[in-house]
Length: 179
Image (tube, rainbow, N blue to C red; front, top):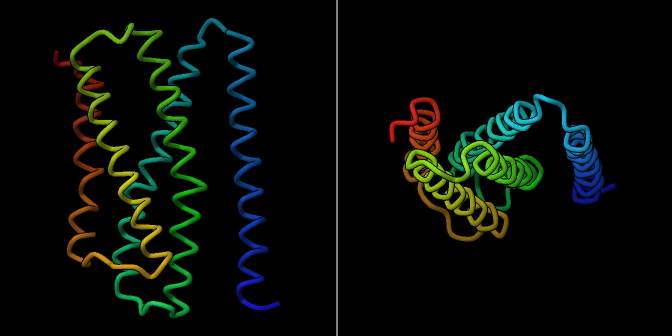
């Protein structure tokens, strides 16, 4: 088999494993939803936190991959490896984690707080900004995939700080509920 054929086969296997993992996660969540245990909202909160951690891990790591990818010669074996890593990280981990984060977060915002509270509105705004940053990274994945124009290493080093700053602000809002 050629390198591209092997990559497609391993890519399909990785996608299948990821699909199974997401299906199991959603199945457990669905079973808990149907059972409606007394501590149901704690289960939702726990799964929300797991999804947030998964999403944040990708938001921290993907710009770091871009830093290294920027220095790789387009078309080189190293560049092609980074493309696979970036695509899988974004599509298999980050995107599902972001969607689950939003769905469970909105459920918690409604069921626990009725969408009331200035801190909650500020948090949702910051998560929306984080989602915009996520989509910016998705555009960069597509640019790297097509060997399109690249931003500088310095740009990606600075961009790497965006999710950290947003995370700090979001955690402060959630824990302190200052307004």
